[in-house]
Image (cartoon, rainbow over all chains, first blue to last red; front, side, top):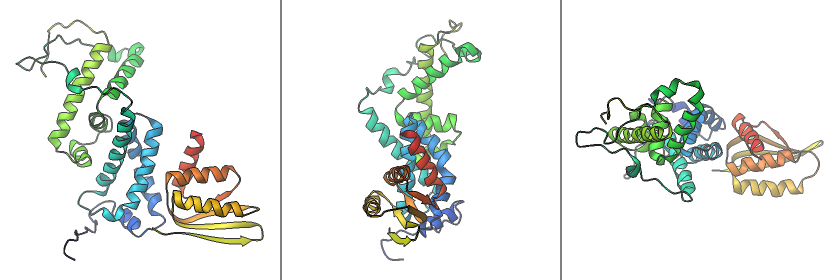
Length: 215
Length: 87
């Protein structure tokens, strides 16, 4: 190994090592295998971040092309899947940023619920949870939830989709975004508080019997 | 990454065998070659390693115009179909 050259992990411990090997050899089957293996989950990740099917399709196609072009920069320091999903997530976030230039961004701190010094909600909490089981109100709930998700900053929305909808672990999410597990948990917590507040505003519920819950 | 176009004129068709990466730049070059070809035109994608989004649009367009695409990787076929649906 020459000085200044990063060691390349052969990747044989990675479940995708055969795929990586095919891509590095420019094997004509490599792209097909990559797409077959990752298309579905990559699309769900992209659509979760962009909230737009057309944008997500473009993001995923571009991510595949980018991954194949840059395969020689994959050093095997993380799982290939994490490396690839990072490309997808970054492309989706970039696409979202371009879209958001035309929108008014919501500062999360301005719309999170307020807490008192004991960590309890400063304002009464409306219990809208009985509405969840009411079939007549499920469309209303879905629309309110979608609207709240779209208002979240992209990184928070992405973490929430990945954890609460797609069942990624916090560690997997942390690896994709290059942040700590604690950082992911913080994003999730803030996102959930925000969504709860938006649902409370959108869905009339029962008056609280006991005002305030703990944060 | 390399890209090659091998053209063979057969009794019933002009066949273009493509290999390597088909991207915007190469699609433009291929478009020029197709413009000079006459009769039945066939694009053989069996040795294609990668197709970018612009090239997918190009393939969808030439196929709609009558060019035959053979040995098309499944994922490229799906992307062409998605491109056609999006029009």
